[in-house]
Length: 188
Image (tube, rainbow, N blue to C red; front, side, top):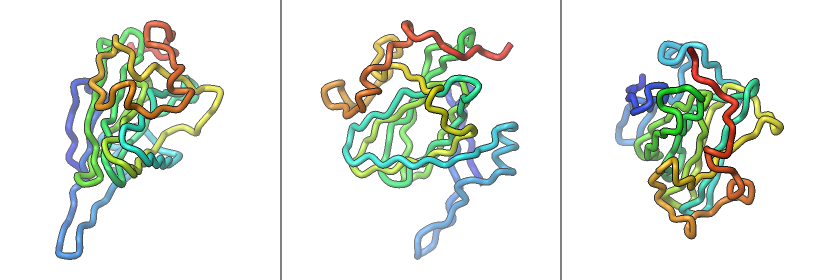
């Protein structure tokens, strides 16, 4: 059972699993293929990924894989909290260049669905944060792409300043959206 919450960009949704609690703790179903197919038909997850960030303000992103290796993602936090961000990079989309940013926490258990055609990234809000995400296509290194996380044109209100953010060398070198031709087009 999930509560589905729409976002400002309709293709991005937040799912919150129902928790059944008692004195021992709680139980919840974090994924159900039948239920998910009712919510987002045609998305079949093939790989689960896990990312640990030791420090607060670790930024990972903004990443995407180009077609034919594009990936949709279902992102959740197993420990800690993140600001999770999805940027629409589908040329011709009415929301091209806009983003959705949501706080996801282990405490509440929210999950954000990020469809194909979006760059994705997050910033940890707590140390020792563990993020899990399902993807609907296998990783293909040659299809890796990215957008600069702090591109001023995106106007993302990151919780970390550029001086505070911990990034990989690769993530520091991604181009801004205007300098990165998108491999995605909006559906007609």
